[in-house]
Amino acid sequence: MSNLPPIHLCIMQPGGYVHSLGFLDPAQYFQYQFRRLGAEVSMGKNRLKHNAVNFVFGAHLGFDPGLRDHYDCIFVNFEQLGEGGAQLAQSYFRLLGSSAVVDYDARNVPNYTQQVEDVPVVPLWFAPYLRSESPQALVERPIDLLFFGSMNDRRRALLDRIQAKGVNVSQFDSPLYGPERDDFVRQSKAVFNAHFYETSRFEQARVSHCLSLGTPVISERSLLTGPDAAFENSVMWVDDAQLDGFFAQQFGTASFFEQAQKCLENFKAHDPIEAYADLLAFAAGYAKGRREQGLPTCWQPHQINLGSGKDYKLGWLNLDVLARAQPDVVLDLGQPLSLPLRVDSPLVGPMDLAPGSISMIYANNVLEHVPDLPQLMTNCLELLNTGGGMHLEVPYEGATTAWQDPTHVRAMNENSWLYYTDWFWYLGWFEHRFAAQKLTYLNATLQVCTKAQAAFMRLVLVKVQTTPQERMTARVMRPDFALPEEAALDPRLTLTRLASAKLATQKRLHTV
Image (cartoon, rainbow, N blue to C red):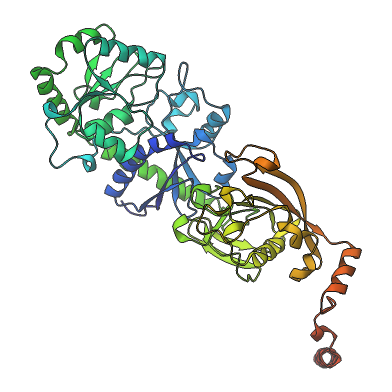
């Protein structure tokens, strides 16, 4: 396939939300299929790429629709939608209804658009990259039956019925995803799949992953389950009436293991390459259409996040001194900075940083690491517009949090801001300074507390113009009186400029 756009797979993860790791399996499956077709594919957490078609997983967890103005986005829906399905914000349905979308189940599509034929539907089938070279024989595996997934009353009742028949059902005591979960799946004789919602849509992602790992799946089936044809002879199905008898009489027998092995072999025959080739063509057409619209090529950020890694803020300019934190730009504001600055970022593309162009700078536990803090604060003052603010969070001096990190170079207290507010002239500032607003004490769990309990401080510093009285203080205290540069007052330079202007005028008159 020629003229393929770069593909970027973006998994949305709110801070510390472990269940976003559940999107790793389908995202890696997309990655595998697209690479088979010759596409260049990357993957990231909360990061979009300006020069790629971004397939966004988990947008129901929060996504700013305005980001579509700068990024090409196709949203991947893996939620069960419709009556009895997931209870999601209306903003998610509006996002899907006004965007390019790919779904895993055609029954979801009418819930967000009337143009159902415009939404590609792709399956999750066999994943060869998950195969084990020497899989353990099913009968020898130490875990009888494994269940994993979110728990509710409906699922709990089914598991209780199974255990009442003498079958030991193993569960995780905390959420597990990725290779850590897969190790247990490979040690299981079978995995049990039960529906969470009343919609009873088949949990294709979970089941296909387990089958690809070489572990049989026993799945509940109702009139609404509606599995893809690839699973009909690859899964061991039980309806409500069959469940008790199956686990009392069939599970763990020689005939069970024989049937389970046939199911695993059947699943290997299903290859969805055509569906993904169509999806890649859809992405290429989408990208071409976007280019023809003449979208803006240079981004002007208005919010800066100092720090990246787990604190990355999508839609902001994320700066960090460490490339491994995967910021938008590796830039140290603790070093001298010449503005305006044009940067070409792999994530956000061409971008301009100009004096007075930023309305907010956020620094969460950053300032205690910076060797030259006055230089960083000077650069921030220049970048902010008047009225713009720095929103800071720092460890509080005296608390154990102040020195727990070996890279800390200072501790902070209420007086740590005086040089940037009252004594600004020490730093060479003249026309602007910071004003302190809204200081709050936080405890170790980041809850508002008293000063005696403080582990952190949260503070807002706002850029303000200095008053005439403050500028008088600066002229008194500074060694240079804060006067214009001497060159501007040099009469020799002034005469030279006048002579040049006179000569240019004479030339124009002569020409006429």
